[in-house]
Length: 414
Ligand code: ATP
Ligand code: MG
Image (cartoon, rainbow, N blue to C red):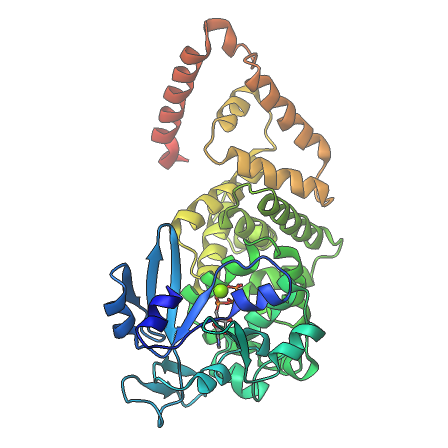
């Protein structure tokens, strides 16, 4: 595709994370292309392409299952061909970045020097307009230009600094790191949907634990998870801190082993202690709430507050709430309840959270062992008398499903 652009008379370069990762000796995740062709010209050249984005317009070109992002060189207006706009809000934030420019201008508006290296396919050379090449060798993450100005233009760059340093094992160069704790409050104005995208990149791509530690170190974490940070500040026995670290480590291990991960589980972990603390407070405020009602109300309130910060799609936040609300139910061991809980859609995730809570020293391991045994019993088909009336897996499955359906019908009554 680079050659198609070149043959049509345009410049075409590989740029960004892909080039950076190659030079660092890592496996690149994807390649981005930068060109002097406008998005419309790219669109005209590739039938398998479409234009996306508003704040940052670019073309997506599809090759089988892969999508390559093709971006036109950006400038800061003035010298451009007047095709697009570069708009800076009075706060210093860039709200539109669609003024075309030269490759050098394009390099200078990128975030870090190591992200601004251009691989020219015409002669296999690397073009460096900053100190990217040196910084790769010194393994330094350095912001291009004046750090404070650049963070004000786009506060997400602070999260990117934390993420890329954690993911790539690069040090953040001191002048690039210094303003971050001071400017961390700017994160509060980033649209919650964009923060969810960043959350996924920080916590679901195999380096969640180092990212979390970096975010804490740079005072950014409290702006993503305020209730979690407040609970960590009052975590006398350290069990909540341990719970979070254990969960992040296990998430990283799952990613490394190519097993599926879901943001719903980490959100449940991160919000567990805030919910646990709020429930009795709500009860104390009166209103005669039962334990269950207080827990449900606390879960709803904490989850709603968190969603104002990071826009978690409902397909994750609803199951997350179920996982939290199942925690005290796992303390009940009456056989009838046990059988029901084992069939609950969120049992497995709730059990995983329970196990981590025990590992973190918050609760007794015996409770986890009980549920481990209960599952083993169920799996072997000798669960508390249920096997007696059945003659084979199929039939037992049918019975379970019916019971599940009944439970569903009763749910609103609890
Ligand atoms: P990853 O390996 O996680 O994809 P990346 O650096 O490629 O890391 P992308 O989000 O894919 O990150 O961005 C591609 C390139 O676009 C970056 O390398 C950087 O040059 C530029 N870029 C991305 N986000 C910003 C930003 N907020 N401000 C300035 N430049 C950015
Ligand atoms: Mg990338």
